[in-house]
Length: 454
Ligand SMILES: [Zn+2]
Image (cartoon, rainbow, N blue to C red):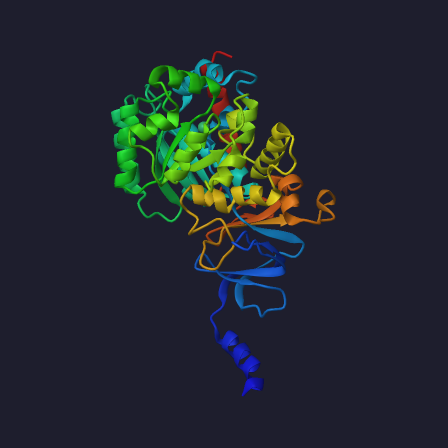
């Protein structure tokens, strides 16, 4: 009987219905718990999910479509845990200014005069093209007219954790925080159980938004079991202002108000103290680390090694392109690695593996999505990026993680899948017309310059 077993297995496989898609014969970087890397591995996709992760030499299923991954790394789609995606149309609008001067002197006034549904929709498409083509499949956002961002995200075929901004001054879309809270609730209802859009609640920050409004926003997030995101400990200036007003740190103030708890994402966490870190650990709060935006703003660097040592989920973010000035998460990994090594004079401070985890599974965990995305494992969404290694600057390769962090750039991403759907093929976004999007955004730039009197 034993001798017939392989034949029976072959027959069983031949009779199995074909998978929808087979990504065949690449170096599969799973980022699973064992950090398995399968040379010559394949990934089978059925109904948008990963149906099998197949090592070299194992039998391959029949497939309706096959993508040849030879000479490529196959990685989980990257997760960008913080951004204000339509701000891509303001990339380079103001440089070399202190954060508060940049915000209050240029960005907030420019936004008040120009941000409307058209800017937000086309700006999101432009940012989405850049993210998709550099391997990001899930992003988190906090901006205005969030329903337009949701519409563009669906059109792009990307996954988004999208938060309508609630801020304590008249915003481009809502003049009062009550209006913004009501709009957020409608947004939460509309996108409940959506396959790509995860509606989130996003009060801007304690330094811009009254505490009682943040508390109301938190109640809303809890009622709808929605991710809750806020900027906190973003700069030394914020820390001074919050301590002057409340006598303690931002996170301590939020704890006192009952805001802290699971399902919460803190953007930046630069000025956190040891007791703030203990609070984040106790309340299972996720953190977004945005090294490029923070370095460019001269704001400081979050104590990421300590956060990771405490077991806190730390994801990587670009922040808005107006403060970065790109959305390439490979570059974010690179900057994050080098920044911590530099300031600590310690090359062991931030290992490449940890950085890859932050850009994938840890980012997913920070967003509360690690059961669905962030690694190449059976049952997860088939969100994948294929990186073409057959170029001089990636030859030869010794260590996939060192390569991903320090050598690969977004432009090396050739093919991208979200939920099994090919959204980038041979570097071209398949879901939107990039030329039209660029033309619309250039026209929007004209409107912004006019509004600023430039
Ligand atoms: Zn931000």
